Length: 115
Length: 114
Image (cartoon, rainbow over all chains, first blue to last red):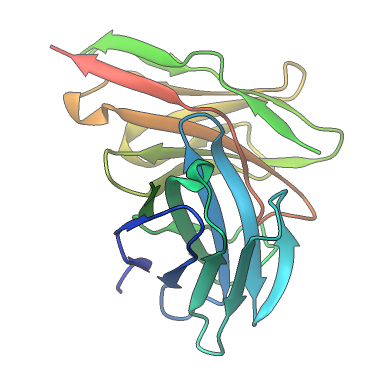
């Protein structure tokens, strides 16, 4: 079974631009979560989608948004990019949402660099 | 809200030696605890998790962890490490109502040398 895939793997943008990252969960998984990883702040939860609905949201500004499609694929968008948005963005999928027995499987991440 | 503290940012160890990576958590409600490993340029891989029941949890690659409620700890151990265990290790916690929302520690870099 294929794992979680994220595209693109690397991305370079300039300040003020916007960016869209994509995540394809493992087949059969309906929950997708997004995390931001930076050297200074570590791993921080962005949001989680289940059945096209946002179920949980982290403490990030409104410039960060996401959505999930009917096939469970998810995208996250960051508008008006800032230098501090440079990070590794990780996507994780699980079969359902909210169940502790439900393991989250992580993708390799998208490395975003903002110049 | 939950939080996790990983007490050591780096742990150097010789190959075949035992290792313990420390993790303490804080929460006012029941929690679920996890250890993830991240190899260079890769995502996170689940090593093990504690949900309930036996306090000693065995995971992949020979790792195990012990949940200690009185000390609010969930330390990761391996009796004999290999060079291939060199990686970043993250302890994480989630609450019963937000099990899919993980709060991570700052990570411990395990450096195994000959």
